[in-house]
Image (cartoon, rainbow, N blue to C red; front, side, top):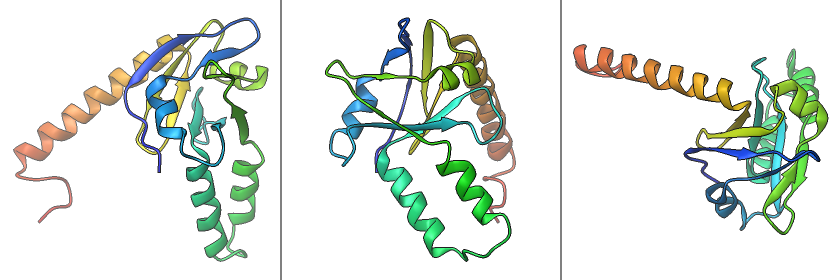
Length: 156
């Protein structure tokens, strides 16, 4: 599975083309789809969530093994898969963000890519820097609390 790390801000041209960070592309070259899959943040954030096709295929398989008649599962499946867009790389490693995705994330002339492990997010740069800063501060507080308490939360 692809692993996305680091953060980068890249320019977006007037056609919505943006270069996917080289480190992200390097993770995706061995996959069956030459590009990324993206969708509006399901958490209601003004961000675009993204991944490689392998992540989406794995999620689909997990939905397939779950009880298909469980409450909310058909809605969850439709909410996610109905909004996913496959964005192919051009020869320069760029993708074209749709106007709808750009509007959702407030992106105009640049976009911040933030790695999150198996997935990544695309933000309007100032918002992305703020969220990343908050995450770093929160992680530091969690780490400080865990070390003061002798271990991670829930450890005994």
